[in-house]
Every structure is written in structure tokens, then in C-alpha cells.
Length: 208
Image (cartoon, rainbow, N blue to C red; front, side):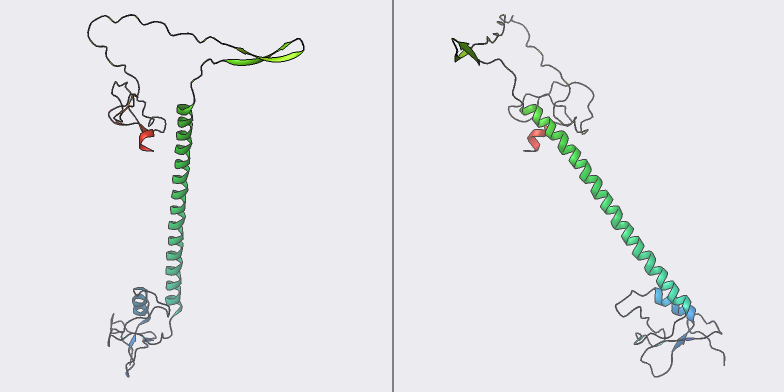
């Protein structure tokens, strides 16, 4: 009597005997065995299918064809390779993020060094002067020019505040895109920098 698969109803071929605990042999064709096995999640004991007749789990995997083994190996190779490719892409994205943060930190450090640099002014300098073979330290006073006296202001409308490009510090790191000067002051108390409406506050205040 020719074998007929109870799943796909195809006849012929060598059947696959399911290793369920049934006392009667339950068999399916090798094509259905391969399809059903690839739909099952793998375990430490391998992929064990469920018998379509008695609904019992395989206690022992039967004799599989080369096509069934080849299909499972190809699936394992593709999933393993795909997960590694995803991990590589994540690592590359992290490296790019670290590089951008380092560039931003370097630009911020240069900006802080410029802001914290002391203003150059003339001071009293002491130079050694040799008198009768005796070295004496004589202070040399260097005159500091006094600022010109301001003329008394003429009564009139109050002067308009100066308009300058955004001084928030976000322009140096490429975050401020405002192209026009502004007269708006920084919202931080005591700061006199001109900050556009998009930035609203200096970058140095937010990073404290």
C-alpha cells in the first residue's frame, strides 16, 4: 500500500516517522517534516516538532533527510550572521557618537579658554639696574592711559541697544542657525551677551 501524507495528502516517497509517544506509528512526508521543523523555535535539545495526529511532542528526533538538515543549517547561518551585522552597526554608531562628542568638547574647551583668558593691561614692571657694580632693583612705572572723559549726554530718546550676532556659544558647535543680528539679551540674570530668540540662553550657563 502506497504511503499518503496526512498533512499534504501527497503519496509516494519514504515517510518520516515522528518520535511521539504514541503506540501507533505516526508518519508524515519529508517535505512536511522540514516545513514544520523550521517553524519551531530551537531548544538545547534541537527543534522538536508536534505530531499533527496526536498533538504530542517529539521525544526523540527521527531520521531526517539531507535537505532538512541543510535548511536548518542555512537558517542558523543567516540568523547568526544578521545578529552580528546588527551588533557591528551599533558599535559603529557608538563610535561616531563618541567622535562627535569629542569634537564638541574640544570646541567648548577652546571657547572657555578664550572667555577665561585675562585682559591684557599695563602694570608696574621691575627691572634690574646696575649702579657702581651693585645690582639694584628699581621699579619702573609704566603709565596706563586713562580713558577719555565722556561728554555729557544730551537729553533725547534713549539709545537703542546694539545689535550683534548671536553670542550664546551654540553657533561654534553648529547648533545656532540664526543669520541676522539681534539686540535681545541672554535670559540668564546678569549676562549681557546678545542671544537670539531660538537659543534664549548662553550655552555656558546650561553646562554648569
